[in-house]
Structure formats: structure tokens, C-alpha cells
Length: 102
Image (cartoon, rainbow, N blue to C red):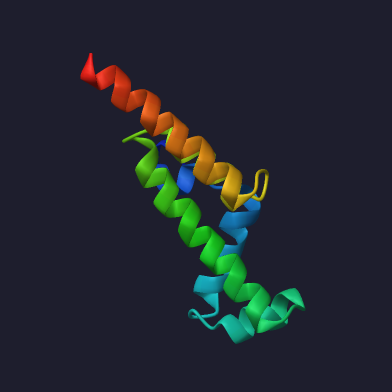
């Protein structure tokens, strides 16, 4: 399958994320079955799925504002903490608001 045929949200995922989605689909959406395949607990799989959902939503937001999407992605991937992400976004919106007023 060519990458050109992939939707933007899927093309932006890491290979590990795509493999997880594949396992999830093949397990007919059974988090319990996926947990067994990975040898982890149900809550761990649920957390992983929640993070994937956030990543997909972020890829949709990226077109609207790439900076905010990048900061959110860093927080989802735990590269920065949530409080720092909120602060960066708030400050960015303040400076953007000032530029739009000019």
C-alpha cells in the first residue's frame, strides 16, 4: 500500500501505533484480547488506545494550527508535562491575539 493512499491521520502515526491498531482490529475491538496478546493489563491497553485517539485528533487539529498541535502532541507523548503544554498554548494564544489586533 502506498503512503499516498493513507489518510493524513494514519500517515502521522508511528509504526508501533499502526501495529497496535492492526491487532485491535483483528481482535474485533476486544481490549481484553489485545491485553493478552501484549501480556499487559486491560487498563494499560485502554490507556494506549486513549493516547492513540488523542494522536488522531491532534493530527486533525494540526491543519488549523500546527504550533498548538505540536505542543499537544508533545504532551500526549509525555515529552513535556500537561501544565507546561497548557502554559505554552495560553502564551501563544495571547501573542497571536495581540498580532491579530494590529
